[in-house]
Each structure stands twice: as structure tokens, then as C-alpha cells.
Amino acid sequence: MNKYGWLDTYLLAKTGAAKEFKLEWGWWRYQVGGKLFAATCQPGPAHKGYDCRELVTLKCEPLLADTLRSEYPDILPGFYMNKRNWISVYLDGDLPEDVLRDLCDRSYALVFGKLTKKLQQEIKAGGPAEGL
Image (cartoon, rainbow, N blue to C red):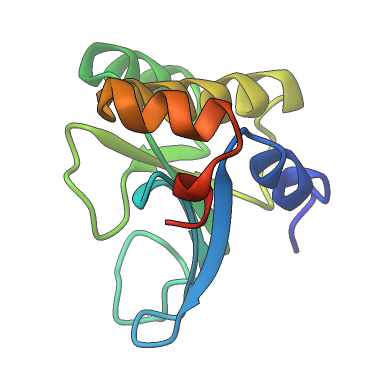
């Protein structure tokens, strides 16, 4: 059970954020400028180590990701993503809310920062790039 009921609203409140369901994967994807910054899903029993628990996957700096995984048991290598640059967080776990909010903010900032300056400006202005 997802104990972070605020998560969807929080992710969608990011400037230019868009949400879509990827049917083939069974994931809700959160994107900015057409680039993924968060995803929620529930891996099935075939995916050992994820225990069929709902999770959110977020982009994270590699050194921080290593530190977080050693400090919090509810933070794992990113499910079905590059394990160095992505983390997954159990949504039924005990991660403090402020830590999860910070991780969401960091993920968004990492992805937004890699967009072209032009696209960043369009998104900030609420232009046509928002729906990408």
C-alpha cells in the first residue's frame, strides 16, 4: 500500500511535468521536456529482490545513490534502469517523507538541467514544450 499519497500531486506540480501510462511496461511515467524523471510501478514475482512491492524510480547522482542505499533499506538500485544513475524507493516503506520529497526534487532537477536551454526556457514560460 502506497503510504505517500501526496506523491502523484507532488510530481505533477513540477514545472512542465506530464504523466502518462506506458501500457507495455505497466508504469506511470512522469516526464519533463519528453524525458523521464520519475516512474511508479509494481514489479511482478519474476523480478527477484523487488518483492512485488509498489515503488517509485528516480534519477540520482551515483555517489548519493550509494550512500542512500546503505543508509535506508527502502532504497534500492533502480528497477529496470541503469543501476548507477537511478534508484527505486518502496512506497510502502519507512523512508521519511522529507527524504522522498528531496529525492523527487533532485531527480527533476537532474533531468531538467540536461534539457537544452531553449527547451528549459519554453517550459518555464509555459510554452508548447510542456506537453512533450
